[in-house]
View 1 (tube, helix red, strand yellow):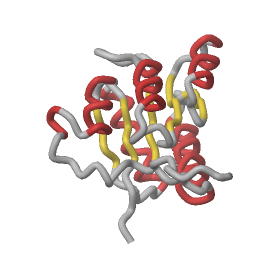
View 2 (cartoon, one colour):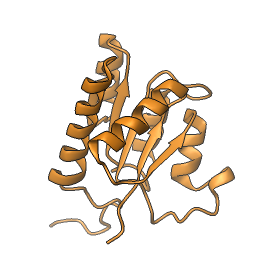
View 3 (cartoon, one colour):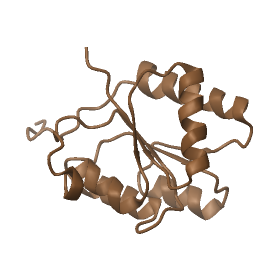
View 4 (cartoon, helix red, strand yellow):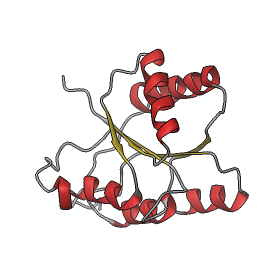
Length: 153
């Protein structure tokens, strides 16, 4: 069985390294794909630009999306993910340091599956990532990526 990847959309190098170490400590075996800005995230997901040769059938099992990103912010990326038929059902967890009520509300309004504030403490961050992995990658039933073309009568 092929283990599906996790797409981390994060521009902060310290947070990327922290996430990598936390994944290792939490023993999450899913490959971690890292993109550094919102535009690159969409190119990766839609197999465009530098990712045009990526197999579109190999979508990540989970997208961990920061809000404050260069080029396109996380909310713009989330909106694009939900509007595109190929990516509309991807599981997207907003993993961000923002505790702004507007960011939380906007994330859910745009279809985020969850909103989690990044803990500052490494041990707590590891526990959060372990919980994310356990819930979203083990316990949760992942929806089929493409909407059925058949409608129920």
